[in-house]
Structures are given as structure tokens and as C-alpha cells.
Length: 290
Image (cartoon, rainbow, N blue to C red; front, side):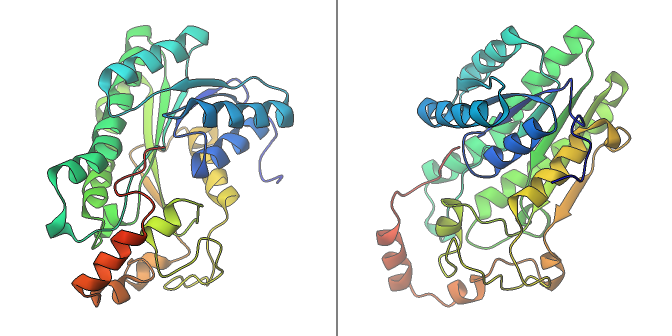
């Protein structure tokens, strides 16, 4: 991929939450290919270390790994301290997320908190913790957050995620103003259909993770991870130095056909028995934190 200069991100050190798998891993790979240094965090240290070893072999650069449950503010502070102890961080990518489909009226407080804790509170802990360090040291910085289309339009059956991501959209706009005079930018991306092994099966039960069908997408295909990673690389680079407070949609035009996930119309017609069968088929009930 030669869209950018190979040194586009040279001199920048990037921290990606949920960086061991899925979209976070794809972004990390692309950032390294463009010259960045990289640190990744997530709950599973073995997954992080495997990704770091893969990147070391591919790019010849050491990737720092830090185990962290971003739902815990003390764990976030310890993770940020460990990352900064190695070298200053220039870019924070808020990628870690958790979500699952469910009938909203049947959600328990614990189920609600399992999503809000990762997507809203955890992202806020990471952002304010990183911002505090930049401001105290008089350093500029960039925060990139990964949202969902439901943050802009709402979505049935994933209401906690829609609520949380809408909050992060508001945070992006608000802190772009508050921290702008300090040289800190905040931006966000809003992906449409970019299948991953775990999320697609949890959120789109009517479409296979590796399927080619992309219902409701005018471009009639899923997005490729590198397309999203390229957009993210641009937004955190100096090429985008005058962009802040924006949430950029990359969805193949999907939101202009209503924005609903493929399969939602079918799910609206599910009976309680259909939902019970779906719950029984799920490998683990609850949100998955990267």
C-alpha cells in the first residue's frame, strides 16, 4: 500500500487500546508500516504478546505490551504510567470496545454496565489520563476514537453501545475546544461494516463473519481493514493537523440507506422463543472487552 510516504508517522509513538486483535491490530500494523513506534494494551497479555511478536518479525521493531482492563481507572493509570515510562506517547487510539445484541428491556444493570464500562467509562479514563499527562508536560497530542454508526443514528438491540459511543462523540467535540489551545487534537472515525472474527458473529447473526453479502451498503461490499487503517493513519498524522472535533464516517454509504445493520429487520420480527434460541447459541453471554 503506497498511498502515503513510508515515514508519514515517523517520530510518533502510538498507544492503541484493544490493540491485540481485530481493527486495533490492523491499525497497529499499518501505523508501524508508516514508521510509528507502537504500544498496545488489552486484557489478555498472551494475545498482546503474540501480536507484538508478529509485528517484531514483520517490521523489526519492538512493540510494548501492557495488560489493562480499561473499566478500572487504577488499571488505566498504571497502564499509562508503564507506557510513558518507556517513552512519551504522541497518539492515543481509543479502540477497545464491547457489545452484544439483546432485547433492551431484558438487560440487567450488570449487562448495561459491562458495555458502558468499556465503551464510555474506559475510553474516558484513557482520554483524560492521557490528556493530563500531555498538559502537565506541555506536550501536544492526538486522540483518535473509534465510534459506530449507532452513535449517530441510534440502533435497536445494541442500545448501551449506541449510548456510550454517542457520549464519546460528544467528548471528542467538547475536548477539541477545551484542549485545542494546548495543542491537543481529538478526532474520531465511524466505521460501517468491517467484519472481524468475534464481533460479526455477536452483532450480526444473520450474516457470516466471512460472508461477502453487505446488505444496506450502496457500494455492495464490506470494508477492508486497511481502508479504515489508512483513514486513521491520515487523521493522526501531521497531514490532518488542522482537523479537530470531527467524526469521519467510512461506511460505503450505508447510513444513507437508514444506517441499520444488516439483519435488523429480521431481528425485529423475532419472537421471544427466537431470542431464547439466540441466547443459547452465544458462546458467552455479555460484552467482550478487547
